[in-house]
Image 1 (cartoon, rainbow, N blue to C red):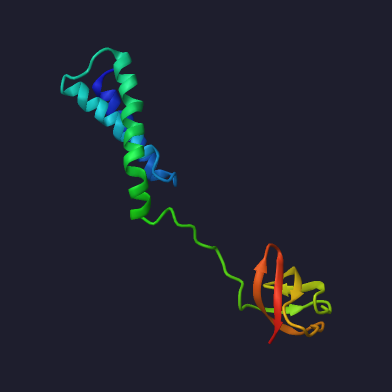
Image 2 (cartoon, helix red, strand yellow):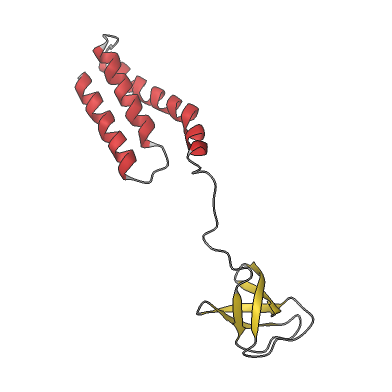
Length: 142
């Protein structure tokens, strides 16, 4: 394959990385294609099968060496919670006995709720979310 096709393919892969939220994958294959094109320009090219063998080897090597440091550098490998519900105010929809299960409204949605204290929670009472376990709110009286 001609050197300029490798360069063009590499540039297209680099553009794909910029255009998509892929997490640093296409960039290494783009760099691999550009390096294969540069090797052809420098006269290091051999038969076509050698280019097609060199391309994935170089790309995967770059991926293995540089993806993790790039992810750390741009803080893309840390998962952040979308939202926290602790200490939010909820309204009890039905009475909840100590240790029992009931319903509470939080941000306009109905949730399963349990009381974290020893006192019952009355219908309409405002409470604070102490913790969330799955789809169940643990509430304490305000």
